[in-house]
Amino acid sequence: MQADNWGWRARIGMFIVGNEAVPEAEWWAMAPEGVSIHAARVTAPTPWAAWNADRSAVALAEDVVRGAKQFATMKLQAVVMGHSSSSILGGDGWDEAVVAALSALLPGVAVSTNGIDCLAALRAMGVSPPLLVLPPWFGLPFLDQAAGYLAARGAAPVRTIRYDPGPGWRDLPPGDLYGHGMGFAQQIAPLYEQVRAACPDEADGVLLAGTGFRCVGLIEALEQDLGRPVVTANQASLWHGLRRAGVRPAVQGYGALLRGAV
Image (cartoon, rainbow, N blue to C red):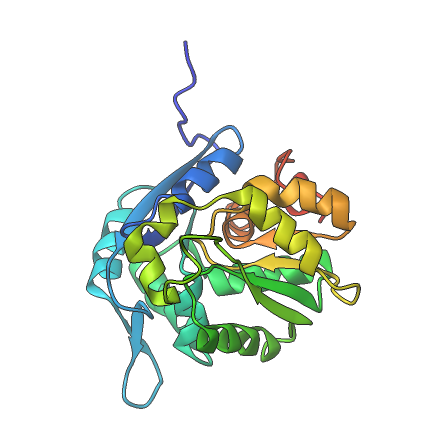
């Protein structure tokens, strides 16, 4: 009999951007034997949950509610709101409010957000301050917001950079890159070179944020060359999801975080 990717150890659900292929590809590349990954696609505006008038709770986007109801029938152990931008732009308390709202729809399932997962991974690896690396489709105001999000939670980056996608792309406004196909034209070799060159001595490690940012293939090489931990958005959420599902296998090839160093 052949392997069929059945989640006999754990099944993990993730909400992802509707027109992205990177999150599923990276999760399946890293997932250990017996762990299956299940995606719900979201096309709602960012953030994927809106605060009520007194900011005491959030209303989940329609796509998220629909996906949660489907996840509730699938015997999942963990679910993540896999959208870095929503965590960053949602504001103070947004991650926790989303966990509460989703938990009400997913009783018995461990719920998280990508923001929570990345912060947990940075803490586990002792990375503070990190070098923060963001995709090219985020504008300069977002870079400041992302750095502020980390700073407010005790992980202020020592430096923030945006990946330069190179000729043919860099002259387009950041907000136009995805519409022109940048999400499917990402190359990790130049990203590796840029991160290696930009990482300052003061950084304890690297955080590559953005679940649509193709980057898990360079984690191991960067860690070997920099001598410091490298955390990425999808790696962090898979690691945290596995822990919350009670599964702690040593995953090889995708950095110290998943290899079991913590």
